[in-house]
Image (cartoon, rainbow, N blue to C red):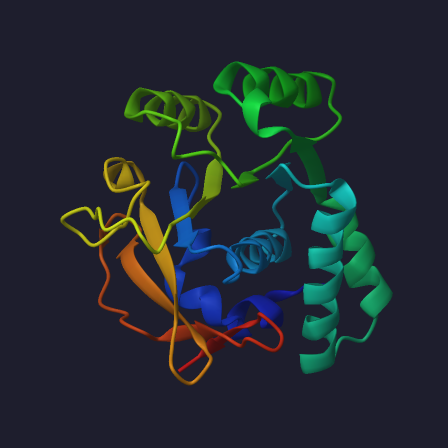
Length: 231
């Protein structure tokens, strides 16, 4: 069955995620504010558009990452009338691959080797890559540029998460905090997750598809479900 209604009703549609390949996105927040939940929803949106996604989870288990997908899918099924929910669950499983690695083993050569093995052996051909937990604090600009160059050569859309820290006041001219304040220009879309006084988590969209965003606080995360909501 087609899942266009789910795509069209997804609050993330304002980001125009299906615009094209070779896009690089960044999600930043302090620990525990919902970076993984947002990345999973971005990945699911890509899957519902007919793409294949590789989710690289750095420092976490496959089981924990899979549980995020299971939980988000259940919320989607609760909010929408899906005639054959089992088909949606199976389709997501078929169009998603989860890979894990330790923080000190993730690099462009390792990523390139694993992706090439999957593609050349016709095991899995992704259109979108999610990298959750990349160590921006200990990676210089040339390292990020190298990974970006590789992803562009593979015609991949990719999303990264980064952890900011309350005591670090360094920030880029566009408002992106450390540790990404010196590499934020390498990303086409940059989203900051910020807790609000009413317990919601605001999605502050700094840049959207390469241009300064005028979306403001159009989106937020519901803290009870970690689902993206409008308004």
